Image (cartoon, rainbow, N blue to C red; front, side, top):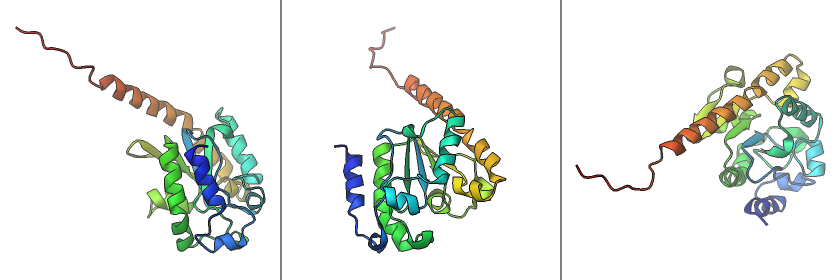
Amino acid sequence: MSELSQLGDQVRVCQRCDLAKGRTQAVPGDGPDNAEIMMIGEGPGFHEDRQGKPFVGAAGQLLDELLKDIDLSREKIFITNVVKCRPPQNRDPQPDEIEACKPYLDRQIELIKPKIIITISRFAMARWFPDKKIGEIHGKPKKFGDLVVLPMYHPAAALHQGSLKPVLKEDFGKIPQILKDMASIQEEKEQKKPDSPQQLSMF
């Protein structure tokens, strides 16, 4: 069993905060151990809490549609949330709940080593952009070391406000180019690596 799977098992029995008392199931996250893209939302909703999987409701269907438009399937992405248990009535997660779940999210990022993290909640966004508003920075990728963080609106926002759907489509459309650019940078880095030491010719 991979470390990521073991971590998921720990999340499912976690009692670190009061959200554990009201959950049906914890939702550790879903996707491959070596995903290039990781998506971080806020917390599980009603359907996710029932099924133990992220993004299984209407927002999940829209997400699948957005990914299909850029020739990506959900199976290639790791999707998780800032908190792994559903807050009552889908209220905002409390700071202590986010803090209790933080070690799980930290470890997931560490194990998966994604190239791109897409934040689709203000709580996920605040980790990298603490003082920004989504309206100002959506669709604008920013590099943090070897990682690119791309803030976006949550697909659910586009279901409530139709005008956001084309905005989301446009922002998702940037993902293939970001991956391509990152691959080029990596290639350049590898080409610049010094070859095995050679003896200098004597003049």
